[in-house]
Every structure is written in structure tokens, then in C-alpha cells.
Image: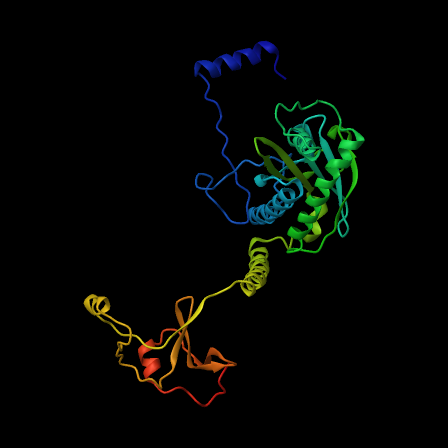
Length: 351
């Protein structure tokens, strides 16, 4: 044992350089032998473990971007004004850090998914809640005062209509991963009073920005890791994007087909074509003949919005001028060659 004088003497000798400080070598414990100088070493905080991979975080962000688009469109129709919702952040943190960053009071809603154990929470900032309530009650949001108090029962009832539409959009987004039904089981104004998981539990927080006219606020969806752990294997970037592409393609195809069925197009027929000079055109009189290179018994070309699509015969039907479709004109086939060639009589003509 050294007394205090001996300890002071040793420290003074190290400071003066009489005794060199012992250098300890760094050891890297691994299955493979590595040189510490060339090994990549990153600091790791055991208080904030990274339990979700980057691919899964990217998939979650993309999934909730679809939720933001659907929610914004639903709110715009409900409130009769343009409401923009976009994903601002997507990160993982502890539940204690998430709760500590929230304002008080706020709109804190506990959400239950029918096929998952545990609760999620949806927090909506008062900066956008009261402009929405003012809009629903017929206000203009001009010089609107944001009160620092919990919402009244009437205000909670009004905002519940907005939250219900948000849960419908959330269900539509999660259907690409697994069918889930979401419902609000509790509401609270002070987030410090709600403890759905321990403070050091890892949660995924999707931060969204809601903008309505000149007003803007935030909305945070907190998903504890232990709640969605059973479906984390399904939330991978490759599988989710593949499902998303297929569903979007089918939805777009049906939507385009439905709109095209109601669209009108112009149909015309070209009997023959030729060229003349401006002088001949200016001197043309009633009764003059225009000579073409096409025989009168050859079919006409049917144009749909100016594009050659069919060959047809010209005639009458019930006293009206009509065209009898002979055959389609393949894409890329020249019109002059198609008209000069005899029509294909093998198949039945269309009407």
C-alpha cells in the first residue's frame, strides 16, 4: 500500500518525464485474427441498441409514405381544402426519449392492432389540431390562437373523425405487409402519464409533417419494437417493394381502364390521298375531278385520333354512311402498302 506522499511523488515523476507511462496494447476479440490498426471499430451505445436493420427502416419509411399520401388525400376531401402530409423523419430511439420530446398538452392516442400484442401511439401536435378544428367549425384560421390546455370533449369528438380516417389510411398501407385493423383504445393529453413500454425499450418513430394552408404541425407514430417483432421478417425492402409494385400496377391498370371506357375518341376514314399545287387548288371549280392513284374498289383507312388502325369498306347502313371493318392495321405497317394489298378474307369482318 502506498501512502499519499508516495502517490504524489509517482504522479510528479510521470509529469516530469522521469517515469514513462505504460502503454497498454488494444486487443480485438474475434473469431478471426485482425490487426487492431486496420480493424474498423465503431462505438456502440448499449442504452440505445439498434434492433432494426437499415433495410427494414427504409421499408417502414416507404410504407408510411404511402400512408401519408392516402391520409392527405382523405383529409383534403373531408375538410374541403388542400392538406399535405409527408414523412419527415423515420428513426429508432428509446421510448423515454420519445416521450421526453413531446409537448404537454397534446393529443396522445393509444392504438391497438387486432393481430399484434401491445399498443402503438399516435401523437398529433396542437399546432395543427386547432386549425383543423377551426376549419371543421367554419373558421378561416386567420389570427387563430393556439390554447395551451387539454382538448374539450367536443374537440376530442371532432378530432376523432380525423384520426379515424388516419387509421383507415394506415390499414391500407399495412395491407401490403399483413392485414391489420387499427382502433383507438384510449386518449390522453399528458404523454408522461402513458407508459406502454419501459423507458429503455426501443421504438420506431415515424415523424410526419401536416400542412394545411399557412398552418403546419407534426404528427408522430410510435411503434414499439416488441409490438411488430412478429412481422419484422416480412418488412424487408425487397419483398415489400415487390408487393407494392404489383398492387400499384393492378390498381393503376383498373383505374386507367375505367377512365378510358368513358373517354371519347374521334374516328375518321380516308378514302384516298393525293397532292396538288396551290394553283390547281385555287382554280378548282364545282364539277372538277381529283385524280388519285388508288383504285375505287380498294378499302379505306380508318383513323382513330389521327392514327391508322383499321381497313374498312365504305357503304350505307339504314340510310347512313357507314364503314365495315375488314381487318386491323398492325402497328408499324405502312398505310399505302396496307391499302394496296388485298384485304384478308379468312377471318370474319367486324362491324
